[in-house]
Image 1 (tube, rainbow over the protein chains, first blue to last red):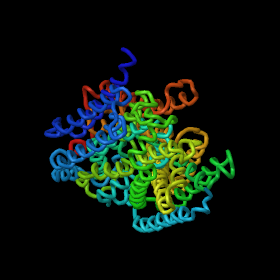
Image 2: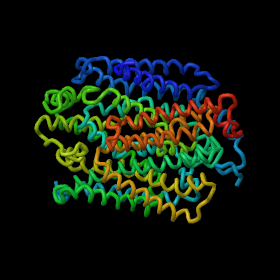
Image 3: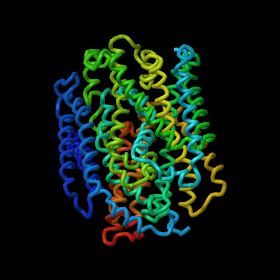
Image 4: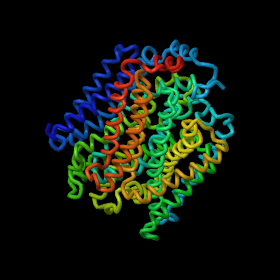
Length: 122
Length: 502
């Protein structure tokens, strides 16, 4: 494997796949993501495109608003867009995929008589 | 510029400390039991939780270290912030809900507590406690470095004391931190974090707006930098001054390492109603983005002013923020900004003095199956010990605030992120896997940092020790889980199982 491939592998693994996998692991209920797959895949694609621009465009590409295109994408797309998309996706699916009132009741009913962290009853 | 010429700056700092003290006394009166003491009685709304989390997370690293790092490596420094669009939701999905629900069923107050409950292993929780202690020294060191840099500039110590200026400034900062952490104790609680978070937001937005205006507007700022022989267009390129792997390392460490930051995760225990977590990512992310404006604003404005010949080149990159505030900002804005920087430093520092004390009086004794008598005394001794160790680190580290902050952030991430983010969502992860992952992350991060600094591994520097340790820690967790937990899931207590299935 050439050392030139290392940044691309690193970007794909650590910059797209692992964050996506962790979000999916945390968000899934009984192994399913429901409609959440759509924003998650969309954000993964946005990041993949961003990493491509950062790594592939010579010197960050042509200027946009005085900045190299790749830098402009980092500041004005890769930070605000995922924040809004994932933040809204989290909030809008919270009742179904996050924590419903029934889920909370189920957890509370599993609560033992007040216990210390090591499990001993107090 | 001598401080007596800028009395409003001193006044702002005094008003800031007085306000924190008053809030501390008010919140102390509301503290009746351990639950109030450690997790603010689980009585916070989502706005307060979001602001307190942001205040604990963003420190002198953002306000002083960020512009300093940008001065040295250009806009590559933004790779540290690039993940801020996804980290709030990532935190929400993987750890926030589970941690809060664990606190619903057990008396869980610290991160080693959560690890003890999830894995039922004192080894895992003890290893986590040691990692928290190591990372706390690093993070407090970064705060003292920032406080020393600020005080050295504001008090004009370099001009009057020469090479002794910085150690003296750190010593003054140490005295302030010790007074705040030991004498104040829990006075520096979550309500002061909320106040400090608000102050940080105001200062960041105001400084950004003024910095852009002082540089002649966005277009003039970036054009000045690109046209300057000292900086050039390379400064603005994403990989202009740094290898791609280093930039990726920053993204990786801050994007995934965030899942193991005890000072942030601890705040999730405090939210009153777990269902309010629904809006946490938007509140947390929004406040973080606003606060990061100071990084971008000063990161661009200071080089632009130097390129325009209106500011002398910096002796130290970390002088970027003080140089702008003392040389360009009107006094009321400089006063607000200094109060905002103090808020950023102190809100993070108080989290770590408390976490360090908690490790000594709660987490380590629990891991050893013992209970300390005279907890308050030991807590104060621990606070002094951790802060002194941090001061030595700050004086002898001899590099940028942001790099020390990266090491500390990376230590927490490498040690704790896999066993929390994966372990709280995947029942097969065993206690052995969690312990191995925590030990791997801590030892590797610390070891590689030392080997890199001693030039034994000269290429392993910046974010790379933490990035390698984080990757290794995830790999070890998965590998040991496959070896030890694949055929038979670990047996979990009913209440912990209910939390993991919720």
